[in-house]
Image 1 (tube, rainbow, N blue to C red):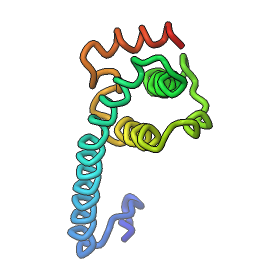
Image 2: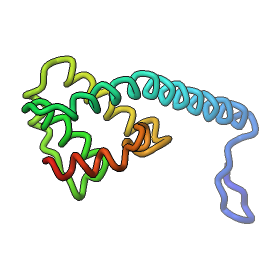
Image 3: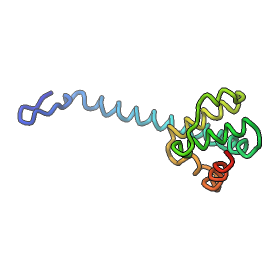
Image 4: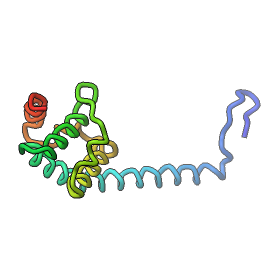
Length: 126
């Protein structure tokens, strides 16, 4: 509805409760998505961090992937490299990516004990 004095567009009073309910529904969905991303992503990150400590081609890919999440400008990561991972590692990478993109409570290295130091050590190894 347009108000003549200001030209503002406001919802009809009958639409306001619906808009408020829709807003709260969307917030609840986002919260559920964050909780699911956190519940699945943190264990996946811990598994990937263990793999990143190893000395293999897959470990190097996992390190590079995690470093890309840590600082994508410093450590660009070519997504094609994910094709070389086995299914479990690939799935864990997607869970960690979802954690990083949706939970956004912390930066990826902050979920790990001494994460900043670990990531910087990995940076020297790539």
